[in-house]
Length: 255
Image 1 (cartoon, rainbow, N blue to C red):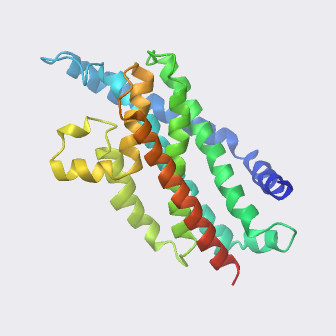
Image 2 (cartoon, rainbow, N blue to C red; image 1 turned 180 degrees about the vertical axis):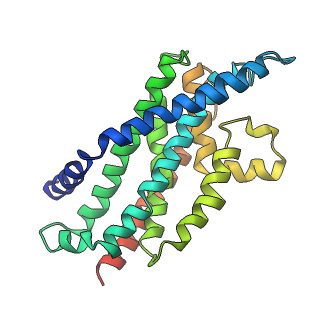
Image 3 (cartoon, rainbow, N blue to C red; image 1 turned 90 degrees about the vertical axis):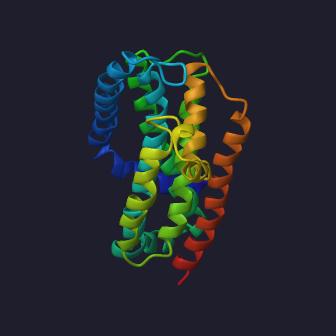
């Protein structure tokens, strides 16, 4: 536990120099998305023949979807370039492991810090949702927890992958062919059931679709009967990623 706390202290000391900028971005991003898409596009949808999306206004539909998608993107950023930099370019971990810190402290510390960053992003987004009047259930605050676990479900496996890399060339591939398509097709902007069957099946194989469904149900008050399964999927991805990250980081840092 002492090693973990020392590791987190290191990150906290660095973060105190950059937290204002990161919090500003975390706050302005949902403002722009919910303002432009939620109310702009939403006003057109509300004048349509149905007027709602899955029984709620478009902005209420969009908000929780973007909340989940935001933590996915945050985890992707946190688990790629910063990790490779500490392994190879800056050799930060070499310095840490020259102290009483262990590889286990490094892995647990990185994932704990990632959870903290995900929490900050999720709480900020949730506050914006409150300001926009998008909370319609007393269970809505649990969507923050769902968003954090969703981020870890992406971040832990990506961290495990990063530990096997020696260049950053694969990171753009992940961004273009996994993160961006999921952001657009993972259920944040429109219901997954409107996609072709093949794309529906692919979407449900990923954590994001489950996180979006859970977060949307918690904020709108219409929790799906599959909520327990959705949460188990997220926890499963995060647990597998934790095990994989422990293995790959140990192999890489033991060399």
